[in-house]
Amino acid sequence: MPAMKTPPPHLVTGSAGFIGFHVADRLLRQGVPVVGYDNLNAYYDPALKKARLAELEKTSRAHGTPFTFIKADLEDKAALQACFAAHDFSRVIHLAAQAGVRHSLTHPEEYISSNLVGFANILEACRATKTPHLVYASTSSVYGANTTVPFSEAHGANHPLQLYAATKKANELMAHSYSHLYRLPTTGLRFFTVYGPWGRPDMALYLFTDAIVSGKPIQVFNEGRMSRDFTYIDDIVEGILRVTEQVATPDPSWDPSNPAPSSSDAPYRIYNIGNRQPVKLLDYVDAIEAALGRKAIRHMMPMQAGDVKDTFADVSKLTEAVGYRPATSVQDGVVKFIDWYKSYHNICDAPAS
Image (tube, rainbow, N blue to C red; front, side, top):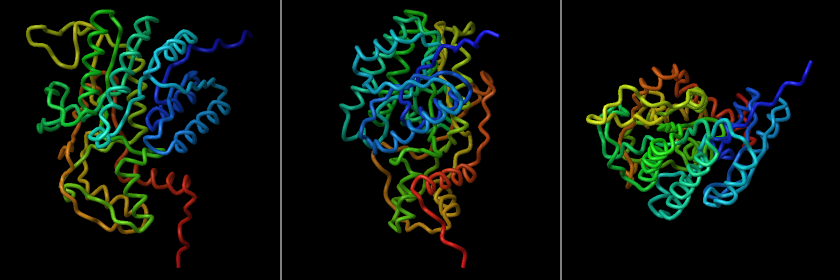
């Protein structure tokens, strides 16, 4: 019998990052070749990013699925163009960005460079090579000053509270212009507080766990009077890959005299992707304590600049479009993270007395 033809690869930018790693790993397990693109910057410890890449290499070998890694900046237009010229991508999943709400308060130039210039380069590369579908990361932070929950794509998202959110809203607008002018199919996903194994050390779950294990106090902002729609990474990946295969198309019901914000007469879509079950921050801390079997030293703090009190995703549009149904409770998801954390950091449980 003739050998099976290798399918064209998917490009996953941010493949050494938290979400990008998990997306690339799932694709490789499904037999889809992946080209990963990441600059391995030092926003947090690059050793974790390199460990993720090592895991992707293991998955590639175990499943016989090609994985190619390119270390470069999104802002390096020549490097990005060379990447697109060397591969015929069937999909582009753009998850690379300068992340972090609080970091944007003190380092705005990094967000302009990566999230705006870098995204413009991605759009241009997709346009030039007629990429069949671009799926990209937006954020729940675009809802900003809006306090109507659950957050719906039908709501306005024009009052961001920090530059990180502003750059992601700009990405949505930039994508629409390319969808309109060049008929480039684009889908943006507004992520709601993603957590799980291999997560980012600057996010609450990792920070809290590090502190509790070390016997140090945790900072509980707004004195814990806030909630988040914590969404487990496996549910996020499932949603991303379902969306990736459903190429954005023009919305036949779109009315320019009463324009819906999340679709268009261009091949353009915006979806929330969350857990649709917000959890109080103090309950989240309780779940971490239960999984670790240790109590936290809680320092109650005021609200941080640029933060929002509550997030809560209406995911009905994504459910209707691709059957998205998050299935992991916060209690189960936190346990899975703690199990990974102990393994990664070589922490052994104390024997029972």
